[in-house]
Structure formats: C-alpha cells, structure tokens
Length: 433
Image (cartoon, rainbow, N blue to C red):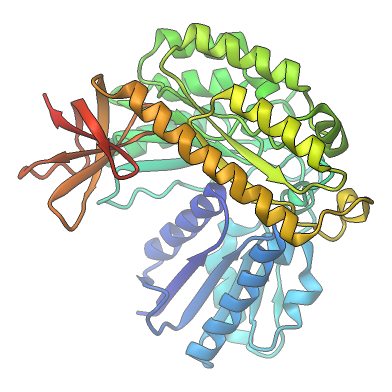
C-alpha cells in the first residue's frame, strides 16, 4: 500500500480541497500519513494570497523533496494555477495541478508515477466554461465540523487580490448535490456543517436559474438530523434580507457572520475596488444586529494599502472601532505581481505596515474581550471538539466563541448547553446544564 502525505497552506477552501483529495486516495487504497513522516507521495496544496504564502509554499515543496528524493511530489492549488512555469521548473516536482482536475488526481498521480521523466503539467485554464467539481466533502470520523465547499471562483477583481486569477470565474455546486452531501455528512455523525466558498455570497449567480445562497442554505437545512449550519466568509453587500430572516427563523444557522471590511475609509475602499462604502457597511451592521442581537460579526482588514496615509489610517481605525467586531483578522498589505495594486504609487513602508497591524491587533484583543464579557452569564449552545491537557473540554458556541468546561465525561462531538461564568484564556469558562 503506497503512503501519501498532504500539506495544506492557506484558506478553509484549500483545506476542504485537500480533505476531498485525501478521501479520493483513501478510497483508491492509499494510506494517508502525516506529512512529517516519510511517504511515497507528497501533495502540497499551495497558497499565493500573500507573498509569504507563496514563499512558504516553495519552502514546503523543497522540504518534501529533501525528505524523500525518491517520492513523487505533487504541487496543486493556487501557486501552479498562477505560475505554472515557475513551479514546473522546481527540480523534483513530478506533477502540477491547478484548481481544477482534482477529481482526476488519483489517475494523474499514477500517470506521473509511471512516467517520472518530465514534470506532468495538468494545470487547466479556468474560464466561464469551467464546471464546478462536485468533490465529496471529507467525512472522516473523529471530527466534529465538516466543511462543504459549495462555490468556487470570484468575479470581483479587487485591485489587491490575485484570487480571481487563481480560482477562475464563478461556479457553484448544485442544490441537489448540496443536499446529498449534507445528508452524507449527517449520517457520518457530524453535528455542524460549514458552507464555504471563494465568493460564497455569489452562489448561483452564474446560473441562468439565478439560485441564491439562501436557496443553498435551505437545501442544507432540509436535511433531517442536521443540528448546526454555519456560513463562511460573505461580502457584506450580498447579505440579503431573506438570508437574515431565515437566520432569525431557524436557530440551526449559527449566529456568526464573517464580513470582510478590508479598510475603514471610503478612499481606500474605492482604491481597492470594494463594492461598498463605509456608510453602506455600517448600515448593514445596524440591520443585522437589529434582527440578530447576539450575532458575532468577524472581519478581515488590510493595513498599509498604497495611499493609506497616517490620517487615513487614523480615520479607518475610528470606523473599525465603531463597527465593534467580535474578531478581526489583520493582514499587512502584500503586493501581488499581476494585480493593479502592485503598481500603485504612495507605497507604505514595511515598518509602518507592521506598526499599524500591531495597533489593530490591540484593538482586536480588546474587542474580543468586550464581546466575551457581554456573553458572560448567558446560556450558549456549544459543540465540543477536544479535551486539552488540563482536563478541560473546549468547544465553539454558535457565535464563534471558544467555550471551556471542566468535565470527566467525554464531550467530543456533543452539543451541550453551557452556562458561562467567567472569562477564561481566549474565551469563556462555564458549566454544562
């Protein structure tokens, strides 16, 4: 039995893609082992959203080649999709696959293994004729949450972002297949399914039937036995009233929305080609919170975008504080070759970017503490995932707060109501009731 090891860099969609490939290889009789161990085949699923992601992708590729020079090395994902020649030129890489053809990955590996002369290039051009690959989600036992990719590609073309070039145009999983996959995951014992995509809010928009994300959510909720449903990252302008009304009506949809803001001033948002203003974003937050008072709203932010002066950063920071996010993911701007922003003037130096990131990190820490304090004393539904070394069980509430309880019972995979009592580590401590 051939041993195969996987390494994933980047986003939840990448992690889902890797899990789907692992399932294909297990079904074909391969033994999946940890990447740290010696294997016959190494698969590196790469990321290029930042320069650091691309650099780390190259480092992991070289690590696999050094670990076992005789192994078959497969590089897949956004790096070969955007820079096939560069990846193909790395000595020791046997097969490159982009963000399509993953359904054929087992056959391609076998073909590359039989050849072993030149690098086999299976990168395909992504265009409007490219179909959604309806790969099965990972249903490996022992996990509590399943990630189901229902959408691929992006047509937004923000000036800083390479993802539309790496992932191609919009394409979506069929409603029928969404329901079938959720049924399979529930049957496998998963209590929570997370719907994810590259541009999740654009689900179905490329289809003449004009399906929406709300239709996809309804398809998932129609599955008997599904206890919790969570949504991945959404563009704020795509959070429609019917989706919010469904969240109010059906408590199985978890009270968390991830809405990437990216910048807190209209000047920078316009330069980024983001599809909203601060006023539009703020109005949406007010509407969401009026309907869902206990909702957690998390976000992504970029600091040091070209043209972001000290005055604009200060103005943006003030707006970000007003948004009262429960958690923020902060990224210093990374110029990606081939994107418009890579050529913009008024470049912010690295030291300033790091200082601004640190400033927002402090704001993020305070925001998380404030959100947790507001929940202290409340009763929350918690899906428990693991026990830490101190005999304390850790889980996630519906509004994406880490909850800890002391229990001698094995709580893994169980949904319990927890009375929260105090701040603890990066979340709240409580007792099961």
